[in-house]
Image 1 (spheres, rainbow, N blue to C red):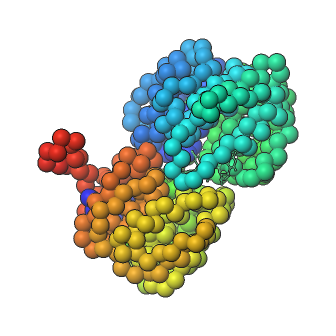
Image 2: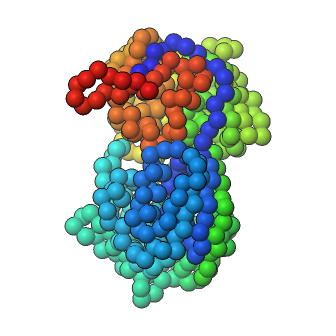
Image 3: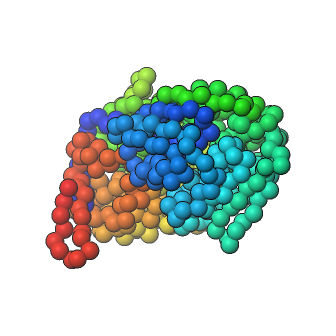
Length: 426
Ligand code: EPU
């Protein structure tokens, strides 16, 4: 429940990056010794992937809220077919990790896409070129078999894909010979995964550019590794500060990863001061301007901040146009914003936003970033907005209610028991 209208002020500390964590944790499967992973975000996606590793046989111990000790040595199986695997999209990274370790993998396909078709043809193309036969069992389980020959390959991706780049990188680390990935994705979490794997003794060059070269190695040793800060979480708090016309300091970030977001906020009229590991955003100085945004693979404007910026633009006078060029269908949440009085029309990949005024309404999170957009809309709307389906938000945002409370927001999490008894709060 959020009562809007209070500008955000104060400081917020960003957690470790979700999309790095969900690649690095499965990456531990490739290691021949135990690892300690630090700066892990406190989110449900991490709990799910940690439990999947436990089901595989790994020893996973939570040292504290943000640190996991993982011993992958007891894993004896290449099969991850439990129902839990279907709960999160990124569990398909087990395909690359198990293939790398056992030269075989059998993994349940993630279900329930939340913004349109999410194909994995490029992942499979990469594995095939490395010698893996693949089989789709009952449309629900992928089986890879490279037991006859598992080798490096030259792989040109038809489309820039974060997941395919990560999955092939994981498999290639222990394949025989050299793998070259061309048209690779360049997101900060790809570089983070490469740094993690290299710190264990892998031989990966070029991560963060279009071409990544991986020479397979036989042994990976244990490490202690700290995950990079979450650029999308940071961008979400920055958008919220701008939407409420506040001034906040966002700590534990890498400003370089936020360039596309910061420059868009500057274009809108916010003042941004960058420090080594922090950024101050000030939206109190002048009225904000309308802008156009086109989402692109990194270093372009991230699609994972698109819904949050659409919510922000509903508060800015004039017509803004957003072009979603990464996903076919990432505007399901728009109808929820319209319930709050937003004037947005969607035409294919374009959203045309007439800035105006939001009023509170009961809305739901249709996916993780859509949920973040609802939070931002609730923070500016007149009255008290209720957001349901918040488990989506908790998949990717650590301690989101307390973080917004610490910035002065009037927000609380309310439990509605199924038995119809009165709601309780926490
Ligand atoms: N694509 C294909 N074939 C493939 C793979 C992808 O055509 O085999 C297409 C997709 O349909 C899409 C485009 O390529 O149009 C990009 O997809 P990509 O593979 O880059 O996305 P992903 O790896 O499935 C990750 C993030 C998403 C984020 C995208 C784009 C993780 C776990 N997920 O997804 O994050 O939107 O990259 O940056 O890293 C989120 O955090 O809210 C989220 C959805």
